[in-house]
Length: 507
Image (cartoon, rainbow, N blue to C red; front, side, top):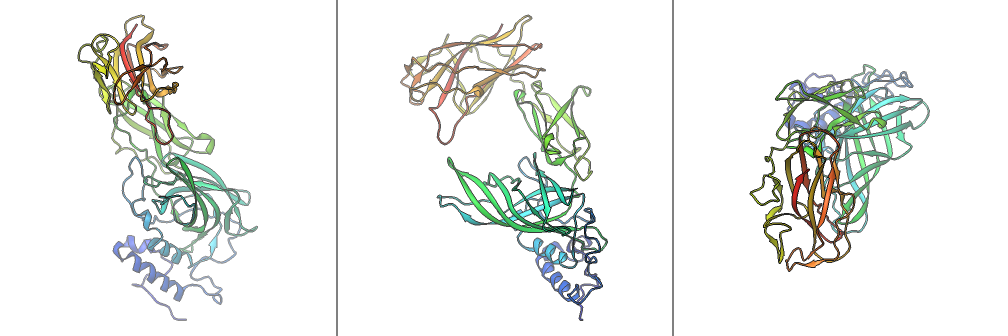
């Protein structure tokens, strides 16, 4: 039997080891995959070669748990952002050289059973069937996620996820004692930023693990099968059938948290972990100004066997900054890597509102087209010479001092619509709370739109009657924050609605 050699490197050495050793540059990745394949074919085990020299012994480890060990295969991509995950930058190319390398290395030995372990996984897919809906183009070709296995009877329990998503599942052995696994029920997997697939479900799977180094431990996993994807085109849900290949290497990436910036006090804190983390994990906020005011964040998705997000309903002070700290880590026992994350910064204080009915230059934070107006068409300000107009998709935030004994936020509101008709109730139109508290209060019923008045305005043609609103404050605290934010709507929507606000005060 003839044997090809590459720079005197044993063929058992996986492709990533050559890259890490600097023997072959990353630019030669495709060629390396092809060459390694030739090496494996020439030197690997054949049907007549029963000594198992190029891989683990066949059958000797069947039924035993094999943990995930070994080096990390670089799959492209850079640092994590709010919408992405580590290693995703070149995900679209995972159907090429990386997969061929893993497949070539895997074929050097026999498949081995899987035991407890975590894997950095890439699922590369192609569309095979799509419903005949115009503009139904899938914008992505791969997704990355972390996959954790735990032995359960003859099969495996699964926890997978990324960027806050945590999904449990199960794998079964294809046949008793087989090192190959399949799904008994559809297994959802998360998609990444920039992908218009709302969800992907694995419906068919053949998965196996490979001992590339011959040390009895699984060094990579690979699989293939069929999946179903759902994405939205306009107001229609589109079903897509997919075929895919799956590749994974042992998880060596520490978990982190997707950083937030310039959060609104009423939004609280909501952090997504880059991968599922253990239930013992804890995340804490510490005020960078005082250095001693700390608030723990609660972990979410506990019922799925891991935490994917951490949150708090605390209404943080305007302009405050908070440092993150964490204990625990991911399901591979890797600790959090968050020391380099920037602090969480809360929206700057707009200043105290004068509570004079918007007559003086008001202190407020605005987004979109929110503005102070003297009229809307022929409709005058509600009171005095000026009112606050907040169209849908815009917002206005105000900071109000709370006098001693004051127990409510009061204001006068008027609903403006583009066409006459019944009211559309949206609790998100406005909300208020006490800084340092955790309760939000808002509308409990729709503002009336009838009887309506014609405004002669080109955008907001009708105005409902004025309505006195009172929101109770049940928590203690000297400062109140309120946000007016009529939601914007896309697709099949009721008539658009704006808010006209006046006589805002705390009493």
